Length: 183
Image (cartoon, rainbow, N blue to C red; front, side, top):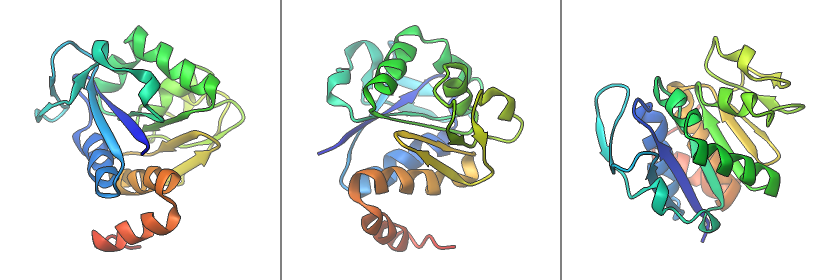
């Protein structure tokens, strides 16, 4: 079974993070919510406190097939400031393992040179941070093993894209139907 790590920093965007957790778990994927602090309780950008499954220092990154970076402020800045997480993002990218980011968080990938020559999208106003990318206004962009999305309003599309990568497009479409999501 594929295993996904979703990272939680103080000020994360609740819907972006939890939509990925919810939809991917419904699809049968193992998803671990990981705090980048030593506290499993993390407060989102709208004051919602989430109890994560694990803390960064206990995470075994060999177990994961994908890292997911939710947006939100100051959540995105707090993720980017975490040196250990950034080392893992770089390692996953180098190894060709999946990395996904939504809203402001694709800026982290841009700053690290991960988006050069790739199609990518982000929250409006952060396009200048997608260094070297072909900026798109699509709700989700999948470029090889890098997935980006625009924000809270595209969180379901983002989560379904992640599910589609590991479970197949047909399963993702079935899930969209089962949650009464349609275009």
